[in-house]
Image (cartoon, rainbow, N blue to C red; front, top):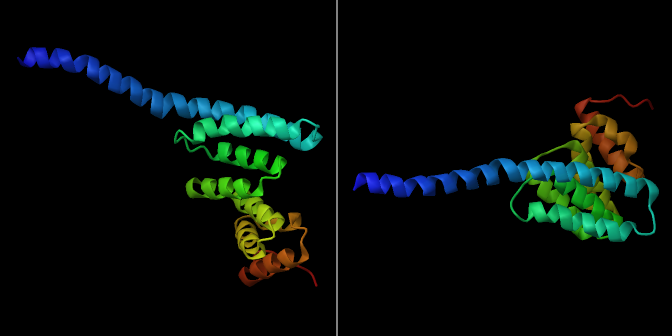
Amino acid sequence: MTRLLRLALVPLLAVAAAYVVYRCCYLPWRADVERKRLETITMALWQRQPIFASVRARENVVAARAYLDRGIHNTGLYMAAAANYRLFDDLDDAAAMYRAALRYDQRPELYYNLGIVELNRRHRAEAKAALVHAVLFNPWLIYDIDDPEMYSAAQAALASRHLLFFPQ
């Protein structure tokens, strides 16, 4: 009886092992390949801004969401999706993508981009918090902030921690 049970378990274990390899190895690898492809396309769209940019950006979002909606948490895919949402002025979804990425990875560029999106959405308090956080991570990002009020807030945060010297 135990021999029969073992013979029955072998195909079941093989299927389970194949699923684990697919889910834990193959899908993340494919998601990373897709991330690289989407980053290249998105950078070209941002630099050239062709007429069809919003159409292509929507296609890029669908491609990124195909992996994100399956539970593959690739920070680069979240960032690519957010950048493409920004290309066709869907700032709410762009902010949601940056926030989702922050659940898995806390990079200064995520906070910075979230702050810029929040500024464009006219959510100044959220923008200030995100930009100050970004600048505390990477002080040199302060020079990319164009808004005078946000620049002053970031400068004050840096000065309180003595991270950069600002001549008066």
